[in-house]
Length: 165
Image (cartoon, rainbow, N blue to C red; front, side, top):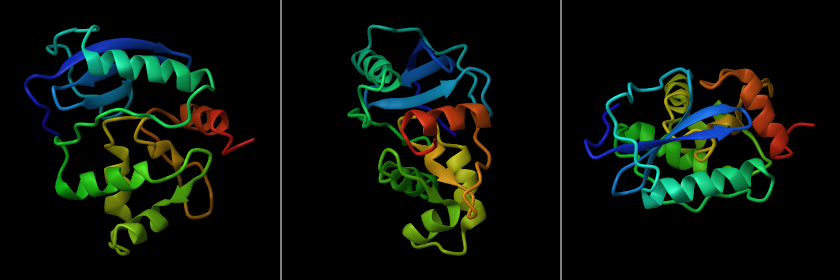
């Protein structure tokens, strides 16, 4: 994945562990749990907690974890992904809070019914965890399959949204 050279970051202490939040001039480019799979090397990204998009993202994440927000209203910069990845990430944004879908349904929804594995790979590489809700994708049988941030976090996010009891 390629990131815009102007990317900046801040750190957010979520109830599920520390998160790295990153933005460019175009919008929010990344939200990762510290230590999650596919976390890019962000050591050289400048810390800029007063960046307008980062301020908005952190505020909205606070509200989400407090149960006061179910949808995010942030400009996104997903340009680092391939066109296929971006199509999957855009489809993730259409999954309503409190609902789930399967990898198969997601691949059908983007018009690529035979691309279930590729869809799964793109979901796993989603750079904007929580906000682009990859945690809402389950196995065909409803099982809690992989999540780059860990299954315990996926479970907690789905419980927070009321998709799991």
